[in-house]
Image (cartoon, rainbow over all chains, first blue to last red; front, side, top):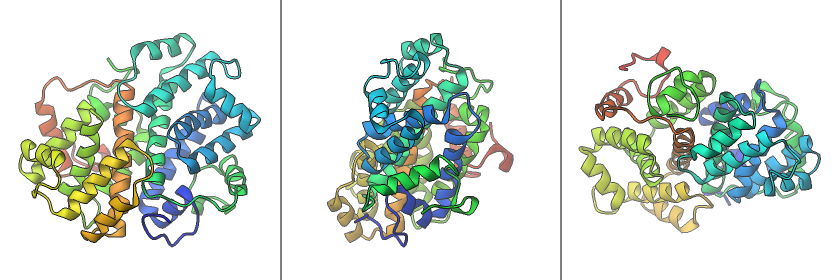
Length: 183
Length: 183
């Protein structure tokens, strides 16, 4: 049972964004811009950054949501977990592997070491890609704490995550008024 | 030197929000609503929640910014540090002390224990106060990672934080176009 009463019956972040729309709107806008806006990082690569943080933080709702969503781009949930466990295993190019390494460092907090950034640059990462990687990882550090800090419910059925991935890979993170909600 | 080139010469978060306005705008909007919007928590109490997270995460820019800002409401920087070190020491009422304890738990991550929430409720905390406490603590978990993840500069002079506190206690967190910037 969540720590606060929610009118919405939606699990995880969905109920919070719906019941608290004044904070929900800028959170959705920021996420839509960072994860679905024009970017030299693909949507799938940005979902992998999100997944590094959610899985590392053991946020069950967020991990399932973003691993299942990343899987739509990467091929399978197993493939996503393989990338997260071994970013330099050849499934993604080295530039992305270095950005995933930076994402993991942002998750734990503190100043990201110079050499991590230098390595990513040598592999081709740009300033904007470095910026967006850090901010996406920071954003999911917020999400995980919001979702678990209030002990939100998990979905009753794991098919929920598939329906969520349907939405996140099509209409994206925009607020319900701006999209055709699937749930 | 920051990990990414910035046109802005402003230190800490300020340069990032200015150079990356498309992500900066929703971050400012969310912060303005949560920290300065209508609320049964005072602006000072909300700055204490921010300070718990920034100080706990040892984010030097953010800690100075929010401790100095909280001090405008609480009386002095020393008084802020006293509250953070001993929330139940009588400087703030028990309801706020319990919310600061929850903020510290959100900072470290994971599911906030039921008993912490129950204790806060018994001391008078409402659903919205619990929600806002968790989300403010989550937001500053984002800020600290954004600021330190990109190794942003510190101000050259500590008077910067006083000028920043002047702004944050008057025009607040709104974007520069919506305020009279003091720097």
